[in-house]
Length: 149
Image (cartoon, rainbow, N blue to C red; front, side):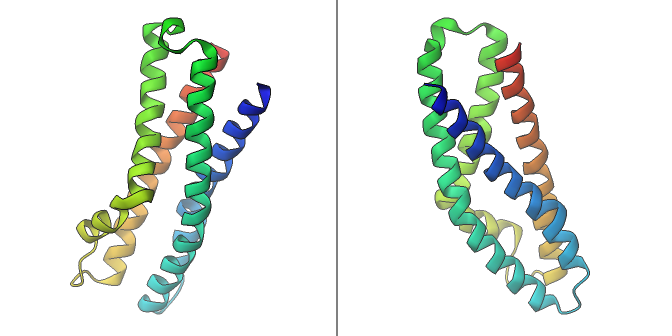
């Protein structure tokens, strides 16, 4: 079942790589644009396109992760350290699932109201993306630690 590892790793590379791209490339690019509404429109269009790919990758990562977990022997084979690392990875994955499959609209209303200035809204979104990216990169490190010891 080595193919599961390939699907798992590739889906995470595309998913978190996309988050990194949005965070480190798109937001700074938006900062150099003049028109605030153009910034918001560009970001929303870009995010909508990436969201479809992210949903596919999150589903593949979750399904392959569960299969790899069962292949490894599930909970019986886990040490307490490994359980913590795996639990952290699961929480990050679950956060993305919840955001991508339903809670994003509600969360956006918390971060951005109709009264929020576009510059402030983009700054809040940028900070949120940096936090999510850092937490995701930590999950990747934990995944490497689980496999490599």
